[in-house]
Length: 115
Image 1: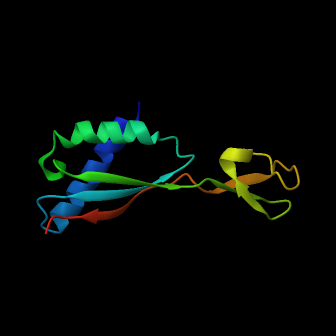
Image 2: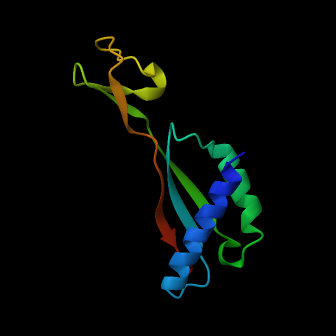
Image 3: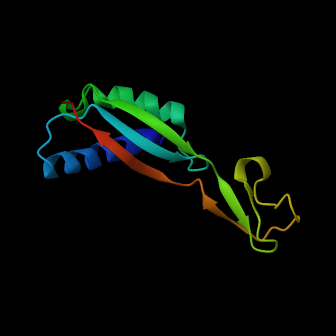
């Protein structure tokens, strides 16, 4: 389960932002998670709940996850399509000359602090 390592990385990033901005507590963090990033949302949230109890900065911090859909581009016909539904083969022309253009992201989108 690499989600625990991902959570520790998020917390490290939050610590850096908090330090740079004189923040002692974070109340909410919004994560953008690509649909085909390889990170399982349920595992991520479970690991987050566990790790938050161990770190004062995020002790009561809520994590919101926004899923970014996987979108693939076909080089032969120029169309885009849903990656999860059709995988590597373009449903429009049958080509395998495709590549992922969206859906592999993992970003901290927003950080909120208590008032």
